[in-house]
Structure formats: structure tokens, C-alpha cells
Amino acid sequence: MLGLTHYLVVAALLFALGLFAVVTRRNSVTILMGIELMLNAANINLVAFNKYAAPGAMQGQIFALIVITLAACEAAVGLALVLAAYRTLETVYVDEINIMKW
Amino acid sequence: MSWGWEVLRAAAGTVIIFSGVALVAAMFGVLLERKISAWMQSRLGPKHVGPQGLLQTLADTIKLLQKENIVPTRADRTIFASAVIVVPLAALLDYVVIPFGTTRSGPLIFRDLNIGVLYFAATSSLVVIGILMAGWGSNNKYALLGGLRSAAQMVTYEIPMGVVLVTVALLAGSLSTVTIVNGQSGPHHLWYVLEQPVAFVIFLIAATAEVNRVPFDLVEAESELVAGYFSEYSGMRFALFQLGEYGEMFAMAAMAVTLFLGGWLGLPFLPPVLWFVIKLYAVIFVFMWVRWTYPRFRIDQMLSFSWKVLIPVSVLNLVVTAFFVIVVRR
Amino acid sequence: MSGEAVVFYLLAAVTLGSGAVIVTSGNIVHAAAALVPALLGVTGLYILLNAEFVAGIQVLIYAGAITVLILFAIMLTEGGTGLGGRQRNEQTAVGAAVAAAMAALLIAVAVRTNWAPPAAGATLPSYTPGAIGQSFLGRNILVFEGTSIVLLVSLMGAIMIARRED
Image (cartoon, rainbow over all chains, first blue to last red; front, top):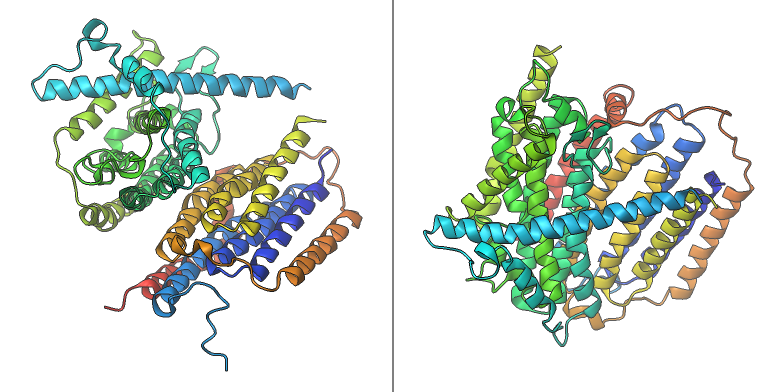
């Protein structure tokens, strides 16, 4: 019988995959993809809690819709930053963008 | 294992949609396009194969099926092959929420989702990914340029289409397509094309741009970009892309009929399904008529037309409609 | 096994498998293309959780717009010619350990907590788009208006940042 725990486990694994992508990848666009995976994992948690723990109101789904909207904003601004950085610094790899280090 | 029957029914529905779209939209639609364009250009169309050329597309399909599947040498094979699946799949998924008519036991629809119109907008936006993958995976400058331009165009024209869909849903009070058609019946309601003519025109323009037809077909213009994003596809893969393009055109026409022209509603001397088919082919004729009448836009003219004209007009239309719905109708 | 459980395991396999391809693939275009089945798997999970409106919005925005944005960014930066570069930095072992520890912690908390079961016999209210709309203009109007301001600001910001300086 499906329960809340199944969805929480799937969301936890997806979150861990996103975290691995953010920590270990060099290309900044891949890091943004990892961030999207983490946001999706959080959304699954929100909607699962809405159905199983608090089915009266729909706060979980509202919160998930707001998170999707803000993820779209953040992806747009993040990718604009990546494009601007590529134009000036000629690279998208985050370990090569170190001109402020001494 | 009672869910096995549901899986079987879903598989049967998929087969029906695929064969229906393949026969009616792709085969008959291509033939109709050639005959109508011939009539408008004062010549005869295909007339050798079959009576009056009716089996022409069948002959074309058999020819395409026996051609060799060529993959360019340094193309990305995975992406090249999966683009062929994404484009027709997104086009075929559109048909789940279109009501084809009504019978004694209810509307003739695959699934009357309560988010019907939103589902239609969502599956239309999946085609863009397939086009980008096709343009990239071909390892060809023209294909890549065509794919990027086509993706930019489709993403831009989704916005006025979405706003128009929201406007009609506002009038009907629901996102479900069956409720929208039922909202156009009855003694005090008109078809929405009479209540919202601006929205109808915007929907037709946006639909023409979404399926990459003239005057918005810069991305596959034969004289400019060879064939755009599907230059490198041959044989059955080309046939599947054509299936996707014509299937999407028929789905857009069917949605225009459902939203604006009253779906299956009509005088009772013909069955409702036949009224739907008549209206569908009327809208298809308008699409083909526009194709052979207008020249093609440049990419910057196309994009600025959407951003600077269609989006402000459609948003203004939405605001005025919302005002009327709240103030006048309540 | 009930049908719901079969579909759930299938969707979870699709989502986690595509997620694994995204985070480990050496070819960035393959990773971006694998984002699509991952997001569609999450859409299926939303439908299983009776959240159809959220599922429709997820396909429209995530799979339809954000994926296209990521593909455009890959094609406009050196995603095409830079495919031969190393894709993983030197923190792979540490990163894997941290991710595994995080997953283990979250799964342990999820499995061991005794979540209160919903009231027996309670039927779910229907989460229709109308009800969500009423909620946005009722209880949640502040977050709705705030999100629209954030959208406007991020739209202007993205255009200004990505503009050419000529």
C-alpha cells in the first residue's frame, strides 16, 4: 500500500542526486540542472504532505506552484548570468572562473 | 489485476489515436493540401494514382518506407533518434482532450480532464524540445539554425495562445473542453467566435506559427534553409516528422473548433460528429488558404509581431473580458 | 500489487534513472535531454498525488520552457565544442559521500517517523483549478502578488544581464 514514506524516499534520493550534481560538476549549466532537480524533490515533498498529512486545505499545492514559478525566474536569471560570464570570461567552467583569487 | 484492463484500454486508445491521426491528418491532409493548392493556382493536383489521385499519399508513404535511413557520420545518434519520437508523440498527445462529438452516454472524448485546456497548452510546448534535439543532433549548420529559430518562434507564439486559451476558459468558467463546448449551447449563449472575435484571430495566427506554416515557415523554407531542422532525416523518420507536423495542425484546428466554433453543436439534422468534422475541415481550409496567399515573414518581423502586437492585444482582450464577466454577467 | 503501486515504481524508476544520467553523463547535451523524462516522471508522481493542476503547470513550465532555456544556454555557450572537457571536478569522492549521507539521513527520518494517518474515511477534496484560483485570491493573495513582482524583476534583470553591450 502506497504511503507517505514512499514519496519521501523518492524525493530524498532525487535531492541527493541534485546535490551531487551541484557539488561535483564543472559546467555551470549542469549545476543549474542539479538545482532544478533539488527544487523538484522539494516540490514532491510538499505535494505528498498535502495529500497524506493535511488533505483539508491545499497549501502544499499552492506552495509547490509558487516554487515552480520561482524556479523559472531563477533559471532565467542564472542562465543570463552564465551567458554574460561566457561573453566576458570565455569559459563556463566554474573552476576556471577564479580571477578574484590571489 | 483489475488495472490490467485499464492498461489495455489505454493501449487501445493510443492505437486508435495514432491510426486515426496517421490516416486522417497525415495522409488525407497532405493530399488535401496538394489538391487545394492546385485549385488555387489554377492547375490540377495529383490525379494519376487512384481515382482522382486519392491514393497519392499512400504511394508516397510506401516510397518513404523503403528508403534507406541515413544517419550523418558525426551526428549524435541518441539525440538524432530520440528527436523523431518526441515530435510526433507530443502532437498525438494533444488529441486526448478534444471532444469529437456526443453520444447518448456522454461526450465522445478520450478523457475529459478537468485541466483540459492547460493539458493542450502543455503538450504543444513539448514539441519545441524535439525540434531543438533534431536541429542539434543532425550535425548540420542549416539544421541547427533552423532548429534554434523554430524553437524561438514556437516559444514566442505560445504566449498569446496561452492568454487566448485563458480568455475562453474565463468565459466558460472551467478549463475542461466539454464544459467549454457546453457553455456555447443553450438559449442565451453564442459561439465564442461571436463573443471574442479578436481572440479567435489571435488563436489562428498563433496556431499557424506553432505548426511552422506559411507565413511563419521561415524555419523550413525550402529556398533558404534546405528543410530546416529535419534536413538530415530520410525515409520513415521524415514520414514521422510529417505525421507530427500535420497531426499538430489538425489538433490546433480541432481546438479552434472546440473553443470558438461550438465543437459538435449544430442543427439536429446531422449527427454531432459530422458537424465537428465539417467545422474542422473548414478551419483546415482556412489554414491552407492562408498558406498559398501570403508571403513569408522574416524572423525578426515574426518575433517582433508576437512580442509587440499579439501579446499586448491578447492581454488587453483578457482584461476587458474579465471586466465584462465580473461586472456584466453577475 | 495494486495498479497504483506499479505505476509509482515505474515513475520512480524513470525519474531516478534520468536523474542519474543527468548527474553523471559526460555529454552535456545528453544530460539536458535526460532532464525531460525526469521532469515528466515527476509530473506522473503529481498526478498520483491528485495534484493535476500542478502536474499541468509542471509540464508547461518545467518541461516546456525551462528545458528549452537550458538547451539554448548550452548551444549559445561552448556546449557544442567543449564536449571534450572534463566534466567532473576533483571533489567527486567527497561529493558522493556527502550526497549519500544526506540521502541516508533523510530516508532514515522518513522511515522511522510515525506519520499520523489521515482521518479514517475522509475523502479528499477535489483540487480543481477553480478552487486553487479561489485560494490564490483568498488566503494566499500576498504570496501571489509577491511572486508576480519577483517575476517582473527577474524578467527585467535577465534581459539586462544578457544584453550585448553595444
